[in-house]
Length: 475
Ligand code: HEM
Figure 1 (tube, rainbow, N blue to C red):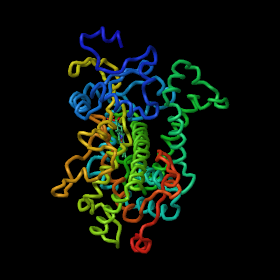
Figure 2: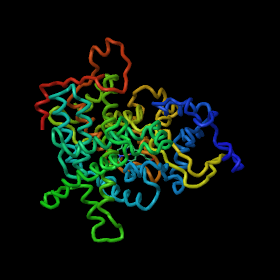
Figure 3: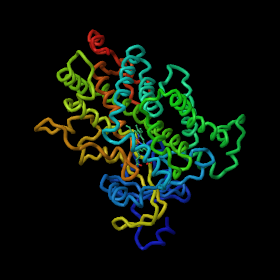
Figure 4: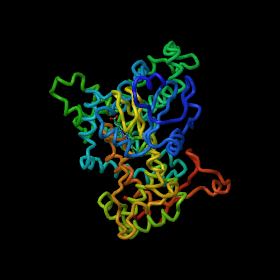
């Protein structure tokens, strides 16, 4: 940091004092760093400089600062942090981690073509179909609720991407993706990345030895299965002429006949696999937050159900066409996203060139992190931010929704989440239908134990609501 300071007459943004080598690691909450960054906002302001094992970061704690850099100066703040480990481990195909280059632009074209606003409505029949399956799975096996949420989110993605229906058990696509995701989560921890950087021969650890999961050749094969497996199904369907509306097919059609895109089939595989990964966890986690919020806030749940009963009635399930007539449900959905954003630090951007912001120097290569958590918990914008209160999105005089649509939860600038319209549809229809069909409450023993809510399974139970009506509502 000192040498960089010398390189430029302007100072770096303020921040906590670092220790040699480790930087500010010892001052950070290892599992929830966004909490530390949000505390630093009080001490140092909305732009904070820190470092971890030599990785220098600027934390942007307000939407204004994030927009100033990531949107208004997007040509300089749309890169990702480079990692020399991605290529050997076969992780260099993921849109999320591509540098701000031509390949990334083509990935964005693939995503945008199918996921742009309104166009995503072609996937509504898929979302309706799987929301029905979600209700039915919850009715049959309520204890496995978390598994059902993940399955809901994953099935929608696989169907929309490849027109593949996930089998009830041992589905090869799900297995290939789960194995690859589990491996990359293991590999991507800061501790492991540091270890392999300093001891690069670990990449060759034989697979049969302890730590064999660090074997890079095997990791590439695992990633390859994730990319290729769903495509094999798609190709069979294309050959049989039975393929429906899919993101992958749309993309193949877009590139077909032009030789300027090189191996475009590989590119489509890569972009689609990214979307699967990016869409499954985030959507399932949003619904998990919704479950928790309902268990903790019975009065909110009751009011939401009253709105549904009045507007939609008890004879059918809510549909996308009801959305505009259900402002309280919409407010609940917004509050779910604000109360506990599922990507609290977004995905870090990187500065392409040296820059000066306000009166501070931001060196080339700096990791730039939008602290979405701090934005969602800002008490000046959201008073009593830890309280789950959907009415903060309703105008007290008119009862109409405010125009705060929480855009910051999708990230910023050229890297903004391209799946946001799709994600909103998947989560909204599930929330509306779950409230129509179920009441959510904690297991009695969970309350008796006086336990704190942890982000883990088995803390909630769901009980069917008005079972007599469930049958009538069945589709
Ligand atoms: C509730 C659900 C979701 C949330 C909260 C979410 C949030 C985000 C955020 C914060 C980013 C980083 C943006 C940035 O760098 O500034 C991102 C990136 C991305 N998301 Fe989402 N996302 C969700 C669902 C989805 C879905 C359903 C898809 C695909 C259908 C998707 C595809 C992507 C892709 C491809 C990127 C990488 C963009 C790039 O690097 O250019 N996301 N998302």
